[in-house]
Image (cartoon, rainbow, N blue to C red; front, side, top):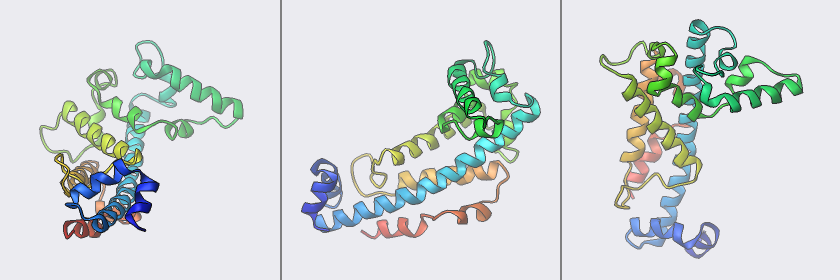
Length: 218
């Protein structure tokens, strides 16, 4: 692909970021764009894997502490999901009309944000202040506030990828892998907190290590 083609397909403004990062080298800018796309694919897989493991851990915990069908049961005034009641009830209604309603379908229907917000101060308190038990291997002193901040950080990283934003730059617009690597470390840390062996689950998806090293050589 020529740089002219890339500007037509991806927009001049978008490609200019890569040119600046590559000190005006247009051929290198196309290579960096390719690496960014491939790293986005790899990290989206990693984050998606983490999201599924996290939401299942939350669900299993609240099935034990809040009871069967807890999502619907808590979508009531003063309940854990009071603020999400409209979303919960409309989702349940849609599944019920199709004759396929189940709690498992409800678990799979909500966004990363839905699960992240269960760690807010308000929701943590209403949920019985027990949700950090899903992280049995967490570092001593890990608080609800820190967990919420970290999970939010991972979610925002995921959203940046989903919105096709660059992840291979520093805040000053230079080629840099620190942003990606910081989130990769954070994800692996929280997998460990949950008692999940990262060496068992991460090979399920494409891993970014090799691509990260290639970006560093540009």
